[in-house]
Length: 128
Image (cartoon, rainbow, N blue to C red; front, side, top):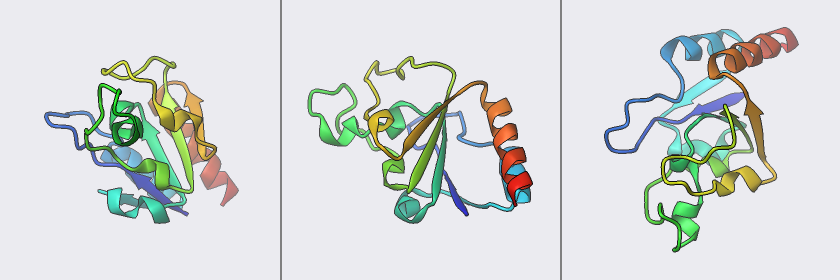
């Protein structure tokens, strides 16, 4: 399985979608992990998103009334399946509702990102 991990692209962004340690654990679980994936999301089996609300919101491309309209985004909506890890349903900094959450291929996973990713990696390893 190929897993796309987006590179943060917002100006001044210092958070990361996955730490090098997390990527190592996912690779150890048998996954192919591709970074800087925006051009390849359409061929990714899974996009794992951790709290990157505004930079994944398709409203930036489709809703002229959105406060983020015109902002470059990570096109995770093109992946076959999306797992979006969040602590809550609170919107991103812009306050815009993330349209990605309503797509049929998107599953919201609530919890602490570290714990969720470790559990996912363990389950994938056990299933392999």
